[in-house]
Image 1 (spheres, helix red, strand yellow):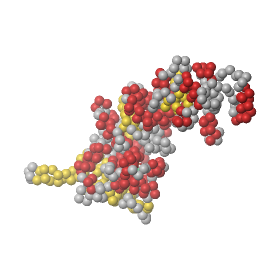
Image 2 (cartoon, rainbow, N blue to C red; image 1 turned 135 degrees about the vertical axis):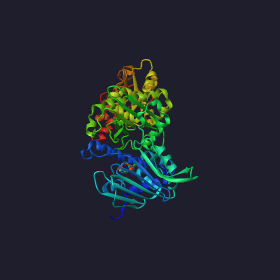
Image 3 (cartoon, helix red, strand yellow; image 1 turned 90 degrees about the horizontal axis):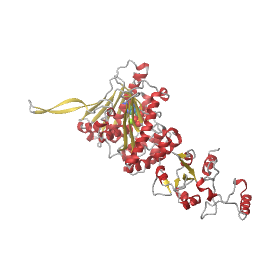
Length: 553
Ligand code: ADP
Ligand code: MG
């Protein structure tokens, strides 16, 4: 088969990786190991669920072989493997549409970009930071043919038939000048420890080890194989055995993020259901958060066996920024995706997990204001999405979400706003319908200002839809100032007696405005402005009406 060209995005990404990740070239190893680990997970899953693989003996392992003289490193796994089509699709294109957006977000500033890339997960192509030739020899489990993919990471790749005795994948790197430092066993061991210590499978390194021989009084070199990671499911240990460093390291090896997580919650549930959850909240919101094809961040394990990491069923969508692990004792190993969707056990775990995450966040807000502020900076909007969809946890979410306000600098909680309510004030008020500056100067606020009542400024574009559904916070009413009728506490002032003097003006305005308005009323809501547009109590607000119109309703 003739040489094949990389998809344009792949070439772009390759360029980018080489130019902005040069400060962390060692991550190539983490990426390769994580691919092998994924491939082993996939095959293990098949041996548990697929009749064709039931008899398969499976001794999962990842083997690194270093040749210091030739400056090559091979990394072999006995995982699921790839056939010819897979090689072309996975190592020649970028399937996820999020990548395009990702590429557009890059600034050209190497430092910023390398952070972005870290979050995005550069994947396989990072090998070209350290290698000028890469060969991938692979055989898919259940198939007889093996294939070799070869590329210099510049123009494209070749694929030809090859030999491989057993299923799995071998990646052979020929180090370039930048990669030469990695043709060193100590260096490689260090990197594996740093990034891949908790990969669930054993990683072996074969290399020339020099030992001092006492009898011969000289150093002898022997080919040696050692296991270089601890391969322990760290989340299964008790909290007291684990240090902050352990958690941070596990987080990084799970997610590929360079930054430490903001917080983590580790729970062991015992009782009618047994399971362990370890959830991390990234310091920076994952960049694909608002993309259709976002990657779900929680991995499901059953009795330490990886089941899947792309299920969106494990947590509700608004918690899609959460990373981590759910490890259940009770689920059957061969759960299929379809079963998962209506599985009672998983449902209970999911419900408890959401409660846990929300209550831990509440603790954080009470005990570490600075950290909580960082959380809000990244995720306030997601909490609002939760308010829209997660009815069962509405009160908990209302406690967590933060608002701009006329009463304080920065942000406030509803609880604090409630504690500031004035005597006679019967509701918490908020204004929606545009940008912050517009809302802050709205004539609608005048009467509240006069009374000294606080008004929350809801300037996020989803606020209107979210809060139009929410009438109370605990016992306290939540009211939009955009609506015509107001609470009892403002009634006297908003509806003054119609007088003989004003009636002719009203009649005239009504005649001019015709059916563009429903009614024209005298109000004393206003102090400085002559008029204001409001919406009837039981109708969608003006902005909602505009949005509905735009959506063709
Ligand atoms: P990601 O791992 O995020 O999907 P990568 O660039 O690291 O992206 O890998 C691309 C794809 O190539 C993987 O999704 C997988 O399908 C395939 N792949 C890579 N390495 C292996 C391997 N060792 N065994 C089987 N498939 C692999
Ligand atoms: Mg990968």
